[in-house]
Length: 278
Image (cartoon, rainbow, N blue to C red; front, side):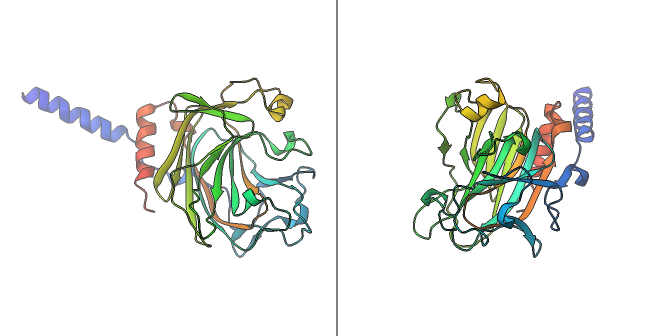
């Protein structure tokens, strides 16, 4: 009996000492609060790197999307791409919608933005391409009257599995509450390569899916030479401009890549992240 108890205690001790704590160096501040030096703009019908109309800007410590230099939106959808690609990570974004939609914006784009995950590079996008081939964590703001979830999923040039079934519609709503007005919202996405992805709002998981993959029927995917059903293990992260002003005050990422091959260690780190204060 004493031997069994001793072995159990030894097992617990080894387990506890083998677990690693969250390291601050694993957090990457994608938005540094000062500038966009680590980012590249790509706006439809404009060359990569051209920030038409000063759409994306940093003011008062915020990363802002604005349209005061537009006469009409004219489907000039834009994306701001971070310089590096990532595979496994927790992405944290704090955003708020503000102001009025620019003239010419579509009805569905009212208080609509998002972040694109596992995306292509801005340099590989066609001049007239509206959205990068990617998975979109779609941010929606309430209109003051109707329910409107946020951190939804849209799939430009991609598909995923929902409940072990291939999901091919373009968008699906999450189970999040509606956020009216100009309040700040904390949206997170847990991404584990080509396996599982979870959307989180203010600490609550509102959606999960698996096996992100290319949709071979999409014309932009075809131009990239990506075959149908090939899973997506990594890619770019970008922020959207879709005709409604939005502010971002935090865009940070906890890199999980070095933990990905050790399931016990990975689960430990993810559990630590879950226990963070919101």
